Each structure stands twice: as structure tokens, then as C-alpha cells.
Image (cartoon, rainbow over all chains, first blue to last red; front, top):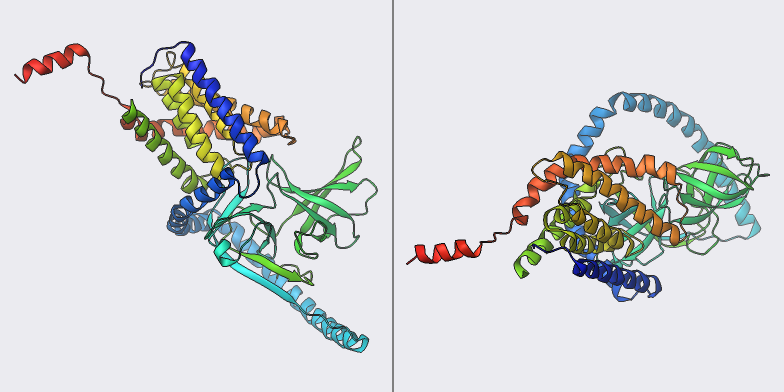
Length: 282
Length: 176
């Protein structure tokens, strides 16, 4: 494609920039069934088979590499987890007796609670492709009942929500994406904030927590149920650090999620959740 | 003109599939290379601004449709980077790979700053110093290191045989 430098190339540039601006504006203003959103779903459907094949092919290599790299760390973690399991077993017995007592008291009080949690299990077939955005592609779509905004769980915690659903695949915006915002609350104090991902290092932090807040390291964070997308009581993570700034009205609260966002195989898409009780790591 | 354009489209689609399927598995410390950007820059270095910007446009559009929540930002940044890559093509000799590597390192910074600029316009809070050190710098290094390998893969599609009129006349008389 040889070409001569001249005014024509600037016309090409400004023409392409003009078309880009039109596409950006149309995408911003159109609805979910607009042409660009439909094109996004088409691209999602077209790329997911190849992503799945590559992910399946590279999975043993990645697992082997991770094993070699983290062998020492795994041994230490195994010891630590064994001790933790022993401790948790005792807590399980304690909770079981409390549960039975709770059931007896509810019966006495005439309460009837039903648990209706309809979920769709899905495999992750595509990992994030960009440095800026955190989203994964899963092998379940609108034909399986997946719809936009459904909450997604994995590894004992909240992962994110469905942002787009093609017929057989869906895109999930992860909790640590900068665009994600989920209303959460501290389980101990009841304080409410919005958990967001950080652009710099994809960590989680809660915004709008007042300077006077009693929140501290180790508190469990759950969804608040505000906004209507996420049911109340889904475990999100634990507070890993609380920082105060002299000039800010809010505290900076960092949260550690039980989910490894960089290495997920299966997720659970929640279809309908009534009376969703907080269960950490289950 | 049509065949080189079709070739370019095929190369960009190939780069897009590599970006979507392979790149997520080859991230180093969270940094992912941008194959589409490398290809757009290489087209700019080889054929000039119009080709570079058109390659960036098509590749950016595909990339945005797959990953970006704002379809159009990556499209804009890669179009502009492809264009600038074309403007400096006389200073970048692809035979000596050090110069294109350096140029792609700079092109990544330009691409990401344009991207960040538009994110800022759309209301995103971008801690520029931290993002520069933790996101853009590793990606720029990664892109620069990958550039020779990408070039080796795509340059065979970028060679366009242009026979001079004197060669065509000579061939005509040879066949007689």
C-alpha cells in the first residue's frame, strides 16, 4: 500500500477519528439491543470457542508451572490450612448447634423461611485480554437462562456480575474492574459503602466509609442488597487494611477477596436468590 | 489495492484472535502485551500514515468490541498511533530491529495516554503516576520485546510485489 505524504492522509486520519467518535457516541447512547451492543455479543460468540480451546490446551502447562513456582509456598499454605481446618471444624459444630436452636425458636415463633437459590454453573473460557479492564467469558449464555446483571460467585465469594449475554457465552465484569461498583456493608458494624476495583493494581477497596467509622481489619464484608442487583448477604471478603488521610472525608478501606481473580475455572451465576444467608467460604 | 487491503484485514483479524485467546495466558506480573497495537505500528512503519491508521482503526474496533466497556476509545487511540507510526517511518528501519522496538515502546506510551485521556473525559479517576509505573511501563517494555517476533510472523504478509514498468516490459519480451 505505497502512498505519498500529503493532505490526503490527514483527511484519512480525521475521517477515521470522526467515525470513531460516532461509534463512541452511538455506543454510549444506544440501548442493550443497539447495533454496537449486538456486534459486541457477536464478537464474544465468535472468539469464545478459540479462547476455550487455548485455555484447555494451556491449562496443564499453567498448572505445572504454578506448582513448580509456588511449591514452597504451597507447603506452608498446606500446613496453615490444616491448622485452620481443625479450628473451623470446632466452629462448625458450634454453628450447627446454634442452627438447630435457631430452627427450634423459629418454629416456636411461627416463622417459615424458604431458601430458593437457583443457580447456573459455568466454566471460565476466556480471561481478561486488556490491561485496563477485568472481565471473563463463561460458557453459559442467554439460552441457558443467563441475563444481564445476574450476580456471579466463585471460591466462596462474590466474583462480579454478568455484563453481556450472547446465546451460548456471557461476559462477566469482575469485582476488581474499575467500572464495577457494588454496594456492600461491614457485617459487624453495618456500615455501608461501595466496593470498587483499583485501576492501578486491581485490588478491592470500599469507598464512602466515613472518617468516624468503627470498621477495622478482619471485618467480614457482605453485599448490602441496595440497588437490587445483588441479594443481601453474599460474602465479598475481609478488610485487609484501613487507612486515614488527613485531607479526606472518607477512610480508605482495602478488602481481600477469597477469590483469585486471575485464576478461575468455574463460577456460579445466581438466577434468583431469596433469603440469601451470609456463608463465608462455602 | 484491494488485495493488500484484504491481506491487512486478515493480519489484523489474526492479531485480534491472538490478543483474545493467547495474550491472557502470557501476562507477566499482570502486564499484557498489545499485539494489535504492535501490528498497527508495524503497518505504519512499513506503509505510512494512512495504512497505519486504517490498521489501528480496524484492530482497535475489534479489540474494543471484545474487551472495552467503551467501544471507540481503543479505536481512537490505535488509529492515532498507527498514523504517527506512519509519520516516522523514514526514521525507522525495520532491518535494524532496535529502532522499531524503541518506536513501539514510545507508541505504547502514546496509545495508553490517549486512552487514559479519554477515560478521564468519561469521568474515570486515573492515578496517572501509579498507572504509568504499574500498567503502562511494563506493557511498553513487553510490547517492545515482542515486536521482533510479531514482525517475523507478519512481515511475509506485508511484502507487496511491485514490479516497475521496465521490469514488466522486460518480462513481456522474455516470453516472446
